[in-house]
Length: 105
Image 1 (cartoon, rainbow, N blue to C red):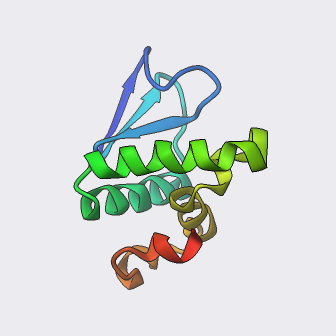
Image 2: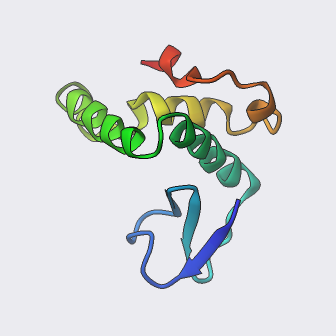
Image 3: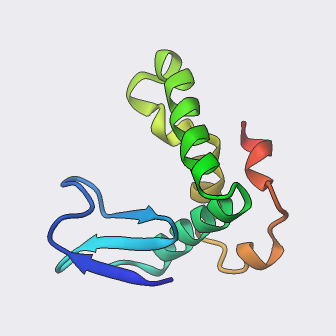
């Protein structure tokens, strides 16, 4: 995964942001292998949803979960649940089935 270091993205308070398969990190940030794996899982999700639908679904699911989870809506999004649960498994992307995030809905 390509990591692009800069002074703009991600917003302060975040380690990295994955935009269309490119990982943006602030200058001086150390990106761990598990963060790379987490974001690589998101890239696989994006590809199978043709990128635009990933972002639309992500925001829609966050809005739906917001009333129930308040400050924890982000970590309860199905895409995030799949990525967090499997980010320590370095073989996950080799074993992963398409649309695996659906089981985390």
